[in-house]
Image 1 (cartoon, rainbow, N blue to C red):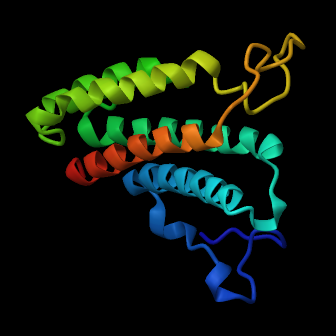
Image 2 (cartoon, helix red, strand yellow):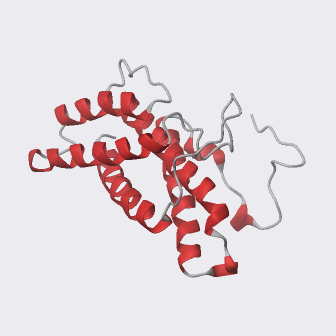
Length: 181
């Protein structure tokens, strides 16, 4: 079925028409995750190059949210790919999801024995992310449901530092994703 309306439809420039139907199913989670990471990476690259005089004070929120959501989608991809007969019951809690996925990765040939320490390093990066954004809402909304300001304990975020850490996560996630298909 090709459901369209005046907003979500093909346009006159074929290069800007995204073919959604190509990425449904298992590849969908992976492609979504890669898309979120790619978008965040491109925003940071544009900031570094000072394209369009982009403002890091504004882009820190979508960049951080894009990375977090990308991580969540990679974990969902791994959950399905590593245990297709009985995927994990995942939540929005990255560390709970990572505990299940990392255990399965250790058992799978996707991660060579000499790289098992990388799993711990990725876990450390995710723990630091969750320390600042435990529920995926700190960069998504300016305040909590109780009207408390989000990120109240965080003064400065370097998008360069975040980008470098996320490049490590993405590189390993992509390699492992290729190995568990």
